[in-house]
Amino acid sequence: MKRAIFAIAAAGLLSTACASDPYGYGGTNETVRQGAAGAAIGAVAGAIIGNNVGDGSAGTGAAIGAAVGGAAGAIRGSNQDRANQRRNYDQQRGAYYYCYPEGDCYWEDGTRRNPPRY
Image 1: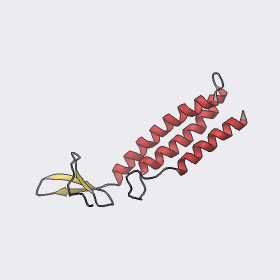
Image 2: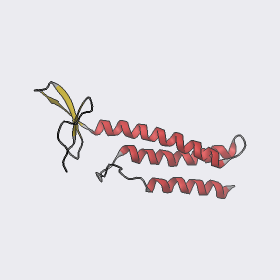
Image 3: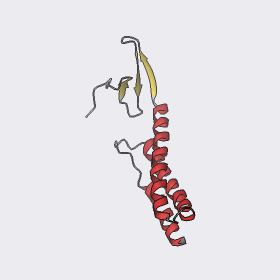
Image 4: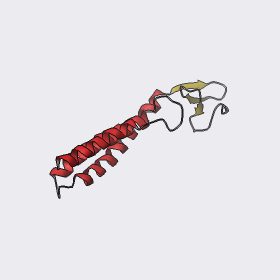
């Protein structure tokens, strides 16, 4: 039983090493990073709780814990990404826009402010 918990915990921790920025910016994307960390922590906690409660299935507990932890981590990371954006005001248009560190800017309604760079 201890081997199963250790294997699940190791798999959860290794999954955080695979987290990368899906948008290709090479920077830190908090949504991805914290989502993976939340999934790993949730898998470990779920395996421990699942082993000690109910039918004693560590695998089921790890799966549920990974899903819940991953979702919670992604939500937290997304909020942090949004807070890291720079908010500016365009006086001509009379509207706010956000710029990412990579240089892409978007109006508050989600439309692109500047043309894409290729």
